[in-house]
Amino acid sequence: MELPVEKWYRAISKRRSCRRYFPQYLPQELVYQLWHVITKLNETRRSARIELLTESPDPVLKGIIGPFGKIKGARAYAAFIGATGDEHVAEETGYLGECFILEATANQLATCWVGGTFKAGAVAGLLKTAPGEEVLAIATVGFPYLKHPSGGHNRKPLEKLCTGLPREQWPSWAEAALEAARLAPSACNRQPWRFTVAKNSITISLNKPPIGKLSPRLDCGIAMLHLELGALSRGVRGHWEYLASPEVARFTVTD
Ligand SMILES: Cc1cc2nc3c(=O)[nH]c(=O)nc-3n(C[C@H](O)[C@H](O)[C@H](O)COP(=O)(O)O)c2cc1C
Image (cartoon, rainbow, N blue to C red):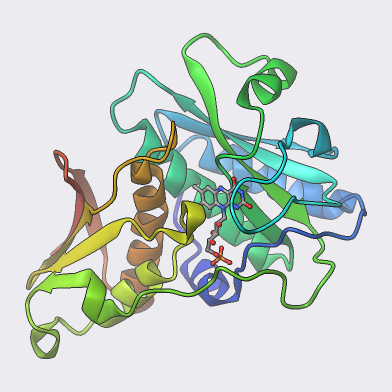
């Protein structure tokens, strides 16, 4: 599937995690639009897929962990399901899930990734997932109750995140790509990534260990999509190769 660059790139700076929603079901035309995109997205990745549930996530949400409070009012959620036998399942799930999040944002919907405070087994039971599949995260979806939904949106400046070439020598597309990656959401806003800039490539590496079962590689998968959209917004195409830990993946410009 061709990434809808303009629409999703614009959505990057609009997206914020939302934890309080109007208790309103999604209109049918929005559900169809999301299903349509999910169907296409599910053809693109070998080890991750998405399912949309048009019902309240309340029964599968756990209590409060961390500073942000319980999510309330949502009437729909997406489940991000991974084939856990694949060594890159976390990155693939992060990348694919964020495609869904940016599509929802572009349709004026609010979302929140939920990787910790949900009952993965209960969602798997509802969806009757196949053996070897696991629900790695969900995302609540709906209409925001408040205009400026939640805190926790601060980000580290690029100077603290980047190594490699000095900034004045970055290729012209790198600034947009890195700024988009910097804005990626991450569990507990840990921003567990570093970027190494070279003339023709940017490498994402880990700089934090996992929290519980949730791999920071999933966060890096989200940052991969943002970085790629930032490069594409400047007309630069590239390809990804996965790398061994602590590196995650390298984006290299395609000639
Ligand atoms: C993989 C992942 C898991 C997350 N899990 C939770 C969660 O369990 N509960 C929650 O309230 N927020 C969760 N979040 C939302 C983050 O706290 C939020 O993205 C971060 O604070 C940055 O804020 P922003 O999304 O508004 O930019 C998660 C985000 C990601 C990317």
